[in-house]
Image (cartoon, rainbow, N blue to C red):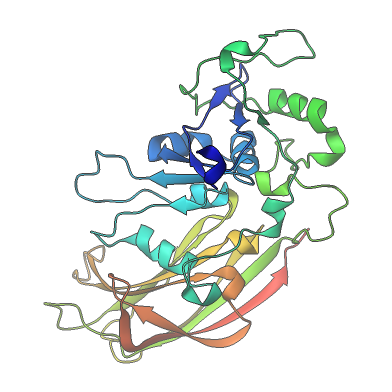
Length: 338
């Protein structure tokens, strides 16, 4: 029967080493496996764990689904799973929110067909943490200086472990220092930088400059008489690039509010980066400006952003187009200062 199946559903098999890295056991055929969001959050931590997941998903499908305790149909953050190479990241569509907006922006690329290619860096990165399938009990437990001690138990990941020196020594044993790039503080960089030193397609670190000029034809939320709009911009990509900024709010500026404010975001990988715009209106008094209501949103993959003056169409919370509403922005890219 297996010979007739192209992809077989299997339970993902892995072990955790004494230095808290993860080793996956790769079946000799194409397979698909499911992960609960709790396991995904631990297995996709930036560093060696995410690198191992990225390596495993080069040949196997991994789907992630929300935990059953989300009785209100809330959602988890899908970005770590995407950045670690998980191909299917399921979200609850019964309720709308920031996570669904990210999903809308992620798959706006490629004509919005619902399928996007992995970045080339992830597909051609050095594979680590994957072995041919074997029973964990058959592994030799070694504690010699040149070996890595493995536990036969899967799960029970310690997400608080921060031992970069031990991880670096393992990387040096596996690849040699030249093929495992190091950050200035000596920590291992993230998995998508684990590429061959001869690779010519590496992306330089860039800075995305966003100048928010104005908004037009904003629609008032229910029970709001006057709009006092402001914009919240969130940049998501590699963990060190995540950043949220906020513009000033404009009193009684519902028709065509103008901000003319500039913001700057560092990008280590443009193909993994997303930028979201959330337009809100202040509903509190001058003494209490923290109360606000949602107006519209937009999410864009950074690799689809073009330089120059651009109109960014706005959407409601349910991802439906807000007719005629848009932001007028100016985008520019520049190399990051070394």
